[in-house]
Image 1 (tube, rainbow, N blue to C red):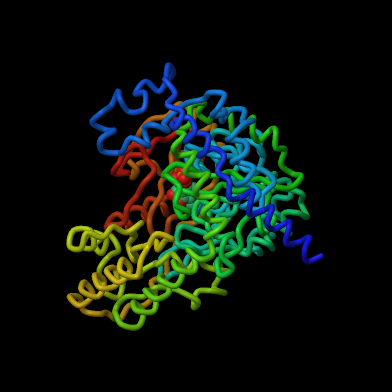
Image 2: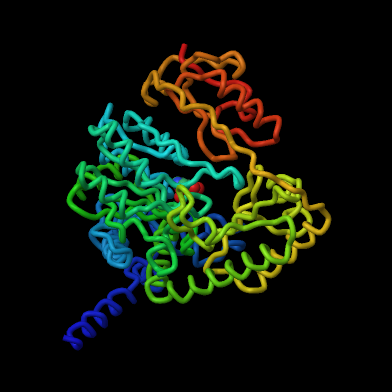
Length: 495
Ligand SMILES: Cc1ncc(COP(=O)(O)O)c(C=O)c1O
């Protein structure tokens, strides 16, 4: 028995040590093939200034569809082999390489499970790619308003009870989207949510833009595939080292038709993907399979060291950790996300970001009114993290610590949906000052940090409370996004 298991494991390791796509590209380069195909830069020679800077090898493998290199449209050679290895490593039935980010994976998840008019359960703090996917599919959103932590000013993950309640009220919903983890590292109780969805026989689609690494370390929250969710889109580029825009779409189980998923993916996916991006996915998969746990242990230890130092030796700063587990919307958390709360220094996260950038040449991942979010990854060293802690300490010394109480964030009530997002998007619209749009059906989104929840989405009726809330946020220096007008003073409404 033992020998059998060992030999299965040896075979698995032998398979996972292969990098079929990367090898095919290297062979092509090694053979010195004379190119009479696109891309027209032909190994960088047509763009020498750029090639000198980025390096010849990147340009050498910037190739296109050909029999030796396979096609993303209908993979059957090295791309298929590389995708199969990714499926195995991530615990999925199928894996699809994406060269247009997790956004394209999210579009595919909705388009392959929903038809126009289908109800779809979705956390209100979903990424804008989910809103655009609703415009593409014509689905009807049923929003779950997540709990907001008043001290952090951050929207949390949705809870299993909220999902159960939403499904009781909307038993004809056709799919549910879950974010694992949120931008700030909060993880939902995914296994329970999947069990609830199973009772209704609807697929659970997981936005795992911030969760590509979860499967590979026991101290990290459960990944979508481990929790037996049906589909997940993962930004491998964010936390697993592959190049920006390279992501994965994973599927498993019987509720998802693999052929239809591929057909849907092909509706929007380029037929000319970047081979350097795809090859970086192939290598990142191999790396995380063999070294994921070791590299992530290092990242988690570094982040926990910084968390401890900041919480214990820098007055006025606070980084959440185990204290958050068990709060509504935080079943587990990702310790590699350092959400540094600066409100007791009497400054905003935006200001802290500016000082770190301009005074210390440090760039954070995100800032909001109360926090800066720093990502500690598999690439960090103790020295990097020490530099960050030192900079924070220098900055904090110049501020007086204030006694800050929680300020409840009273979000305006969810507005009524008058049109489906797609109907509003394609309707005749005009642009009017936000202040004059009360009672109108809007055709675009208004989104604010904090707490990272859209205040209004396409098809909803703008209320006085939302206008007041936007005014309050603008006065507080918070950022408002989503409208074509970059200052969000005007909004598009249905005529
Ligand atoms: C929660 C969430 N979902 C989806 C995306 C989209 O991912 P990508 O940038 O890989 O398209 C992001 C990007 O930041 C995100 O934060």
